Image (cartoon, rainbow, N blue to C red; front, side):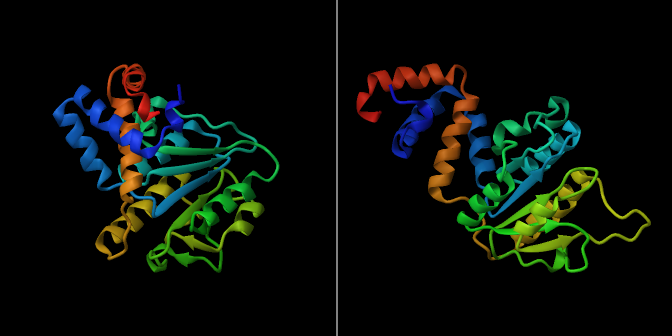
Length: 235
């Protein structure tokens, strides 16, 4: 039997029509409503964060603002979350993990560039533009660095430009989770008021809808296997 993850989009659409009968109408309406506000126009990249509280808070922020993808670059620290802070938000996100291997920063950058993203480093450098002045018409990936030292030189080098958040106090930087929340909240609100086509494509929505139904229906994988056994033409 074909692996569930390797099924064609058409088969996943057929399975969605099947699985929707195993969740409540209210749950399905919620899934469809959230899908309408999901975006891949912006994405977040986290380089070597070590505090699970910060990682989890970032994921919760991304989920709340509809940012679907989070990319994690591991170096000295393994990626892990704090369930009391994520509150299940990571369940609804698409996570892309770049393990601690030589060239993982460049590999992440290459993947994002290939997907059409402009890469933006978040740091208070002299050549950084303020977040309110950053153009939002292009797909953009925002790189955030580790808690103590910020982005590595390697990560800054792969980025196309840099952005900063206005600060008026003595402290020179925000906590990483606060930085993500401030930047993403401002940019997503601007995006929603713009004419930029920021929503998911029909195929992206269909793919994600299937994944969410799979996470919402009880014993979903068993139901899927039952369906495929009775519909061998769908494999």
